[in-house]
Image 1 (cartoon, rainbow over the protein chains, first blue to last red):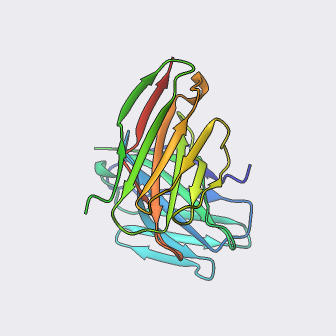
Image 2 (cartoon, rainbow over the protein chains, first blue to last red; image 1 turned 90 degrees about the vertical axis):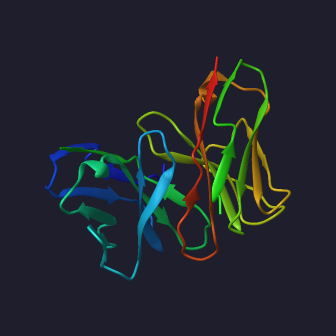
Length: 111
Length: 112
């Protein structure tokens, strides 16, 4: 399978703490995206980082990409209860129209 | 704009029955996708389309067929449902280039 893998599979933190989740993938990519999924809902796009970028910020989100290690990390700072959700990475490769999704990290933020 | 809509939201089928899931998008996107999501797993691509009149197989296409007769619609068909097809089905669309996918709310299908 070309599917990426996130770790940890599940993460539980207190409100106000930072949450870090990681994504590893197997093939060369053009870009990597992170999505959030609230329970029972569709996925919502958070951020996209291109293969020639190393770090990107959006509000409380910080994404890094290390193409030599084929890995990415998503950092959510000052977490809130509303951040409780599953987070997925998706990789896009050159020459295809498909994105391969990872298995997800379930984040629980305790108030 | 409604974005991406899916009908129905829920469905229960008996083994061997057929059904069609409808996905519609009003963003004039070229690419559309059907995924399935099983408990504790990520999304697996069933079929996708890169434009009106085109379709292609994804990771798990067996037992499914698709059609994209109109740019805004992408239909997913199950000809003879099996319990292994019990899942939540998501449709997504995106514009050409390195762009985000927009997801529908999902269809929860149970096959008895």
